[in-house]
Image (cartoon, rainbow, N blue to C red; front, side, top):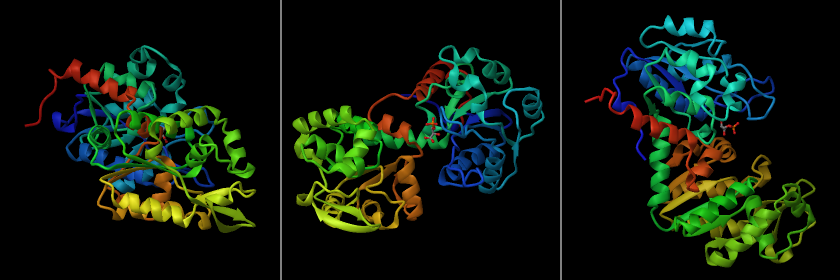
Length: 411
Ligand code: 3PG
């Protein structure tokens, strides 16, 4: 996979369109909350601006198919805080106000355009992304396009696919690091390699387990959260209605079937919890595996499981974590998540975590920055480590082939 990076270009005086992913959680006033993603994106933007580029940022806010799109005014303030330079918010994407603002920029200036998902074209167009109004109106104003939005690279959206087809394009620092670290992790992990999967996204998790086991990229899979419930069900262990009903709600039949196949082939590599924490009248109560089925909801792994998993993590060469071990939002059920994250941080293993919920949990525990790598991606992280190609990255690779003779290599 060959893509270009900031180091391949002379950016001084150039006008550069940078696609970031500063999509954030929002508070009760529907204002975006500051987070580590915004902080990390600020580094690429600052680097380009400090090198004399005119930097125009394109970003989205709000879930795909959701009704929660908001303006990016507050994001501009948050970026300004981290970059320690003024980031001017322009409430337009590719209309005359946006174009005039871009043309008037001076070296080092930074502007943030309006939420790109306000444009229907962004997500609706399915082919010829470079022929859209967005790309036609904007591309002539730029020398280069930078993709730094790893977390949204699994989407075939105009702002990701359209511009690299018509502009010399390169990866920003976040995308560059994600691809370097995650590719190494998939292709040549330090052994033993341990996958620690929890959380509620069982379809994604089962897919990763299947792929990584069949590629011999992982030696042991530690299951927790709903992922472990799928494996227990696949193993024929009845967990009790209070928890099983969650699997029914999630229509997890297919995943249970896949988990059965995984167990048949790789049973010695899949580790399931040996005890659990259930919620009884708001309190944490620990029960052994032999006490299943339980009439109470299982909300965390138990202390014996924590000890077992910590020992395995301690002896690992690589640990990849995705998804919390329990319902960490309730203080009494955060223990599993907390202890496993601490174990990852303290072990000599190369520790990587990814996924939105894991990042929130690790940040809350002050451990996010202490991991060897945290992935800014949720869906993109899962897909990439399970060996799927990402359309945004493919577009960059194609752009590198098309434009590599035109670039000004920095000596
Ligand atoms: C994310 O928050 O995971 C990315 O911004 C992608 O968001 P999406 O799932 O709404 O495309």
